[in-house]
Amino acid sequence: MRMSRYFLPILRDDPKEAEIVSHRLMLRAGMIRQSSAGIYSWLPLGLRVLKKIEQIVREEQDRTGAIEVLMPTIQSADLWRESGRYDDYGAEMLRIKDRHERDMLFGPTNEEQITQIFRDSVKTYRDLPRNLYHIQWKFRDEIRPRFGVMRGREFLMKDAYSFDLTPEAARHSYNKMFVAYLRTFARLGLKAIPMKADTGPIGGDLSHEFIILAETGESQVYCHRDLIEMAVPGEETDYDQDLSPIIAQWTSLYAATDEMHDAARFDKEVPEAARMDARGIEVGHIFFFGSKYSKPMKAQVQGPDGQWTLVESGSYGIGVSRLAGAIIEASHDEAGIIWPASVAPFTIGLLNLKAGDAATDAACETLYRGLTAAGIEVLYDDTDERAGGKFKTMDLIGLPWQVVVGPKGLEKGEIELKNRATGERETLKLDTALKTLQKKTSLPPITARKA
RNA sequence: CGGGGCGUAGCGCAGUCUGGUAGCGCAUCUGGUUUGGGACCAGAGGGUCGCAAGUUCGAAUCUUGCCGCCCCGACCA
Image 1 (tube, rainbow, N blue to C red):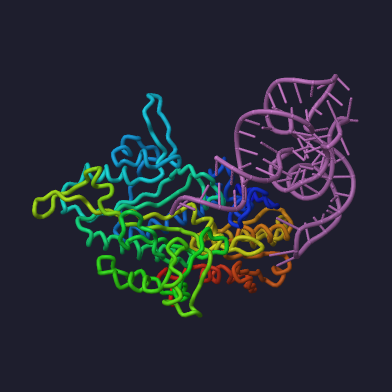
Image 2 (cartoon, rainbow, N blue to C red; image 1 turned 30 degrees about the vertical axis):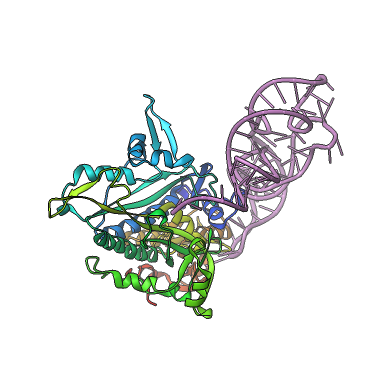
């Protein structure tokens, strides 16, 4: 993409409404613009990131055998009356009426919707287990939206719903999601720690929040230090196998959010040197709820014995739009964003330090075409802005690699490569640069994060 | 929803107390000199001062009502 033809409205100054770093940087980098409180437009740069996050989430869901659907944003109130949640949900649910005065709502979640779809179509245990997910916009009319896209009212979420015949089978479905989440967050460049979450009236131990550590996190968390570097299941993981050893490994060490924290246990179970208390951001939540919805909504299948049985379900959420902000919270510096390669809007920023100079233009043009042809995503700053401004802009938008082409280097047949994360610079020969860049920017196979 | 704060040009702000032709920096446009980490000179454009009503000869400024946004709290993916 040529910058001269792109839509990238950079702000030089901090907008005053944005207090936390991700919100500030997303506005400054031209990723989002606020429409009203907690509601945002995604501009081209932000949208590219959002789509990449979404795609990684999708791939890891698919890997487990979950199947993608797409349910509507607008739902009928009757559906929610069936589950009894229409009255329970409160003001957080945006209620609307259509022209026939029918009660509708903008979905805050989709348990009812999916349960209806499932129960109308599946009648036999032979069709179990199933896990259906979608990635769709939700609306929750938060009392106080804040922190930009991290706590918006309208947000993009992946939510999956599993259906099993027995609680034991449901546990396996739960474990699959647990493992998928470990992999998903690792691929996003995050170190997420599963923490036991409140299961409310249903009880049991099948609810975990996935928390990433960031200074600006919304909640206080406590955990064993070793969790941060614990190995993530690799691509070869067989989701049909028993996954409980992986779960056991990840849940063997103490990890709890404020509300579940037990100081006495923490002190007892975790050696002092390994104790960590930090701030965390919740980026995923998995939950087994049994027949909570299948019962009121009569979602049942016939078992092998011919008996009708309520299906056992769980739901599994990932805050996709929230992740865009969360990743920035976890990865930035004074100068701007530092994108993990897997979600970077572009892989390389190509800086033409002297647009209009024949030699510099030609070198950039060749590189730009070569990289693009090689399938590498390049944002080419071909504008006639001054060098300083181009550097600042590139640092701000945080592309992993900056390729700097100027007349000085070209005299020696050289260009410069800068790693945004480390700040390291190296000199490349122009004629071999393309090959070197291809090597440098190819992502390592996304498998295990080694301990 | 309780507490606090803010709405003046795209962004950041001054002006409001004490009413009298709407300003500054950055950004934008033109011309010129510059050109490897946010240059300089000269010129230009851009604002129903959040909205409405009121007081007044005269309101960004005073009064009343409303709206929007941000921060802290309770709540939440």
